[in-house]
Image (cartoon, rainbow, N blue to C red; front, side, top):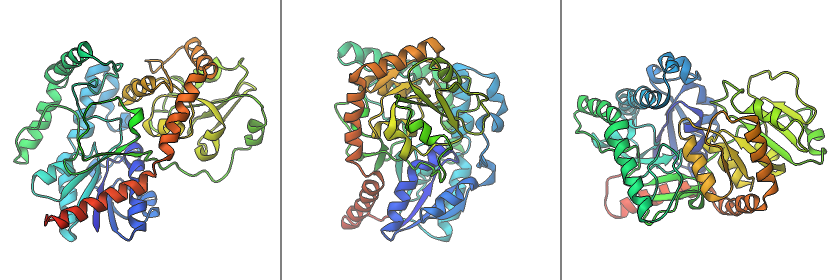
Length: 427
């Protein structure tokens, strides 16, 4: 097969597709990948051919506040609307042009894209190759029996819950996100396309590879047959050298608590990492923090810090993880049976936290800036309650039954084979 990958130039949108590309190239398929230049080395390392995206929409490794300084003065719904328009919708015409440019030189059987790269689905509507979506957030597909995506509502079952969900969904579609949909429809009109449907989901009609496992998601009575849960689509960056303090951490004899704000939302460690270090300074635990490029100064005797940590070696030792709810990190932790304390209220993090809460594998603090008192109480509760660990370990067993890259590659191959058998033109 000849496949074209297309992703937003953001780590959380590129990394989940790396295991898929690696599996497909190992099976002999040709993969080209259009994304940001800072990801060229990681793309080529998995066997794919790197294609640089249009510089006008390439973030070049800069954070979103640097790219869009106007957003820093916004809060709440206004900030969310701005991000949806400026970050995800405005690039659509340039994305379509990018894909057309690449496909002119060589056609592709399919375009695989993260769900935020809307240009792939738009190009299909314009007569381009079929698009296969990869879910890089919790499941966004709407349904009457699950909470509408966005606010991080608690899952409830029953008629009353459905009525509540319908009311919130109507408010979101007809008030909160109405200006966003109108903005999108204006972009579609310039491309000669009709207005789109209400809703945030970007799920392929042919095949949608959903990052994660069904047990972490909210239960739903019906799942479209093209939606496939494939396990943890994660590609942690390898750390060659262990920190100098590693052996002291391992031999401490205390429960290890890891705290992280991920790789993107770590501009202000005062939100979660530093409060967690302070909150647990007098507890009988060992705290291990990921701090990126920040200098956090002197640490309490029971705390250690490093820019990045080898999760494949750290997480099997961890008793609990405090996180802002980055989807990839949460899945890595759950795949190792590590219970969680989640404190995140931006992007998709409220939805990640809501799923952890419903699953019973951790606590949802429902804020991005929890107090030290709240953090200490939550960590004590997660460490002291065996139910959290047991539920996390049950999820870990399900994750380990899924080889996400190989499963995804198999689904892609079967889509092409089925299409060929039915006489459907692939590209």
